[in-house]
Image (cartoon, rainbow, N blue to C red; front, side, top):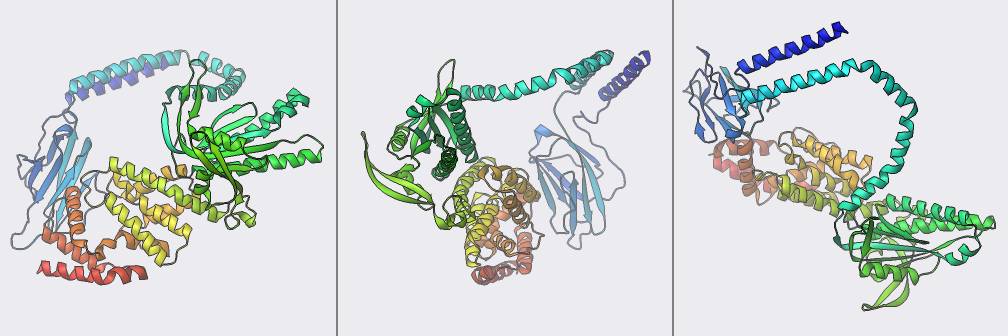
Length: 605
C-alpha cells in the first residue's frame, strides 16, 4: 500500500512541476511574440491583420495573434526576381491539406483560425519561406495555471480515496452485479417509458396544425360481446387488438391519442408536420382492417365470436395540447376530430369510411367508392367514400392490399417536399453570408437542372428522386466547412434522410451521387453524369458573367484576393478543359459555353 501511495504522489509531483513550468513559460499565454532568423531568403512582403499592417521585419520567423482580436489574416508576397512575374504556391498546415497549385496570385487571406500553432509555407520557383503562426486566447495565464493546479490537487485526493477503497468496492460491485442489477434493469425498462412520457407531456405546448388526419376505430357490437364473454378473455382480446394497432401506428409514424373502451383514436401529421399523413393514415387503416378480418376468419373456423371494426377518417386543421394536473393527458380538439368521429359512426363494419376532403388527398393512391353525403352541424353536407384498397397498379400482385415499389416512390416524392423545406430552412440559418455563389439559389438551380436533364435522358421516377435528393444535399456541407464540403454533405444526408423514410440502399446511392460532384472525380454512370453537368450548368447559361463574378468574390473571401485578370485566366483555362457528359447538356449548353469562352478571351487581350 505504501508503494502505491508513493507512486501516486510521485505522479502528481511531476504534474506540479509541469504547473511551475507552465507559469514560467511564455509560449501558450504570450501576448506578443516575434522571433527572427538571420540570413533567410524572404518571399513575404507584408502581413495585414483585420485591416492593420503588422510591424514586419524581413527576418520575421514567428507571428502571435490573439484569437478574439482578428477577423482575418492577409499575407502578401513579393517576387524574388524583379525581371519576371513570379509563380507561387503555399500552404497553411492545419488548415490546408496540401500545397496550392502554382499560380501568379500574390496574396492569400484566411478567415478566423482556431486557437493553435500553424506553419505557413510559401514557395517560389527558386526559394521558400516558412512562418510560424500562433493563435492564442485572451485568458490570464496565471488564472488558468491556478485553476489547473487546483484541479490537480482535487483529482489527486479523489484518486487516493478511490485506491484505498478499491478492494471493498470490487466486492460490493460483484455482489450487486450478481443479484440486484438484473432486477433494477428490468424495473427501469418497465418504468422508463412512463417517466419519459410524463416528462414529455409536461413540456408539450399547445400547437395548431393546418393539415392533420384523424382516425377513429370502433368495434362493432362490443356491448353485446361484453354481456356473454369471460372478462379476462375480453380484456386479453381487446389488448391484443390495441397492441397491434399501436404497432401499425408506430410503423407509419402516426401519433396514438387514446383508447376509450372499445374505441381507438390516432392522428397523422403531428407532432411532426408532414404532407403525407392522409396517405399514411389510410395505409394504417387498411392494415388494421386486414388484421381484424384475418382474426375473424380464424375465430369463425374455431366456432368463436369474431369482432368487426368500423373506421372513420377525416383531414383538416386541429389543435393539440396537454390537459390535467395530476394525471396528464395529451389530446386533440377541433372540427376535424368531430367529423372523423362522425365518419366512424356513419361507417359500416369491416370498411373504411373517409370524408370528401381526405378522398381528394388520397385518390391517386387508393380505389374509393362514393357513398353519398352526410350532414354536419354548422358545416353543411360532406361527401363520404369507402376505401376499397390500394390501386392495383400500385399494389403487389395487383391485389390492393400491400403497396409496391411504385406506390412507395410516388409517396416518397411527396415526402421530398417536406425534406426540401427542412433543408432550405437549415441552409438559410447556417450558410455564411460570404457564400455568394454556393448558396440556396445555386442549390435550387442544380435541383431544377437534374430534373430537366434526367427526364430528357429517360430516367425513371425512382432514379429522378434519388438524383434530386442528391442535388438538394450536395452543397449542405458548406454549413460546416467549405473545404472538402462534399464529405460533410454526405454526413448531413445520412443524418437526415432516415427521418424521411429513405432506405439504407437509397441513402448510399445518394451519397455516391454527392461525392461525384467533387472537382477531381470522373462520372461513370448516367446519373453521375447528369448531376455533374447540372452542377456546372452555369458555364453555358446566359447569366454566366454575373454568376462567375459571385464565384470570384466568394473565392477571394476564402482563398485570398486575386485580380480580375487572374480570375479570367483561371476561368478560361477551366472552361477550355471542361466537357459536358450528357447529350442533353451538350445540346442545351455547349454553344453558349463556347460563346462565353470567346468573351473571356476578348477580356484577356
